[in-house]
Image (cartoon, rainbow, N blue to C red; front, side, top):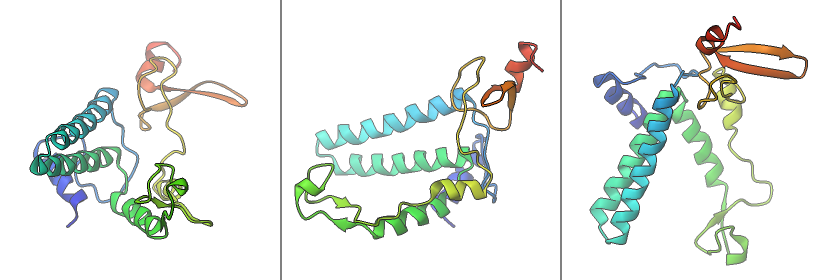
Length: 177
């Protein structure tokens, strides 16, 4: 199995939002859960920085593992095709080259790896399109909260060239459905 599958089993064990559905697809992630997961990743990154400041190898490694686990779990909740995305990024990264001078690096270091001329970035957008992910997420025009739950989206006040989206519940509450 994969790490992504392991995280799915963890979610399933604790009755969390997404389980090991075998087909990636857009998932409705409530704003509260989305915000919680962002904060969770920030906490894990802070734990890494704190451990690094103390020279604590075990703490740094633990924080890196936790950060990866949380990021993978977030991808799970969103319904993303983790392994396929990973493979695309790995292929693109392996086509990069080592910076020869610090001026070649956006980060200013010769230990950086940079995109060579003709570099082809991973087609994450194309991958997601194969699983019917919308090109852009929307926020609800009524409540303005978070990334739009694609399962609930409805079009309101549609005029040529200008489309507004809303959660079905919000649109119904405002008498727009």
